[in-house]
Amino acid sequence: MCFGTIPFSYSAPSARGFYVSVDDDVAFKDDEEVAIPRASLNKFIKDILPDARLAIETRELLLSCCHKFIHQLSTEANAACARANKKTINPEHILSGLDAMGLSSYKEEARAANEGAKVELKDRRMLSASHRFKKHDSEELKRLMEEQERIFELARVGMMEKQVDENDLIKAAASTMATLSGRAGLSASEKSAPTRDEGRATAGLAGDAVAEQSAIPGSAVLLGGLNALGEEDNYD
Image (cartoon, rainbow, N blue to C red; front, side, top):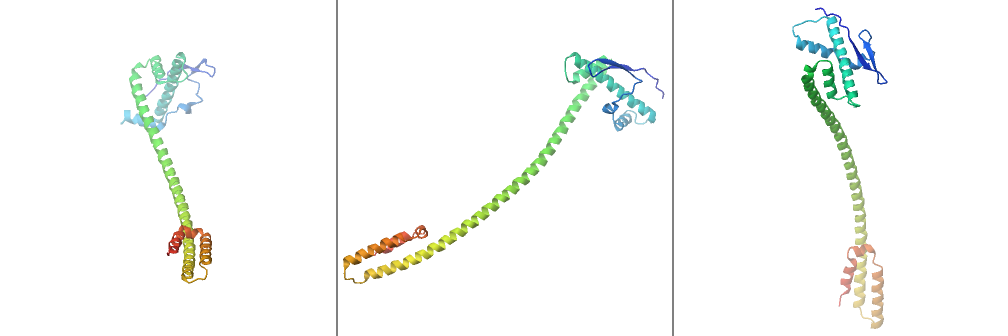
């Protein structure tokens, strides 16, 4: 297989917006930016010519032609974008570039490839978003579980402290109630004994009752000690 040398030249936009002529003999400095992976080219050749074996030089020539085609098409698309006063090259500018290169028959295939690229890009974005969401969701769930455990631990500690305080209060109140019950029984026995002066005894008992009531602690009141004492005083 032999390929002839075809002169190739086109106009490329410069940094200032003017178009300069670039010949085929001038090497491109930024070929890496538009380089086609060799694996993709080899797969394409295998799909088109499954039984053919191409020499390395032939593969290099095909790769170079692909790079030249991309440069030419991007230049025409950039010109179409400039004519439309747009800042971004869109698919319509690519199709206009194909028309300018006399390759209008490729437009339908280009549209189909564009739709396929959109679907592939959408799938990649969804997959990436799903991966980020799963990672974020897992970290958030772990953080919430740790926060929940911390709250439960604080609640358990608070409940234990409250229970200890209540037990101490109950013990103190029970002791106070026992003391008050003994004093109430003693007062009742003294009241049943005969006295010389009824008026003095009555006044003394009233004073004792007032003193006992003022001496009742809050813990006894919480347990109903005051009511119990009042019921015991109603001995008449």
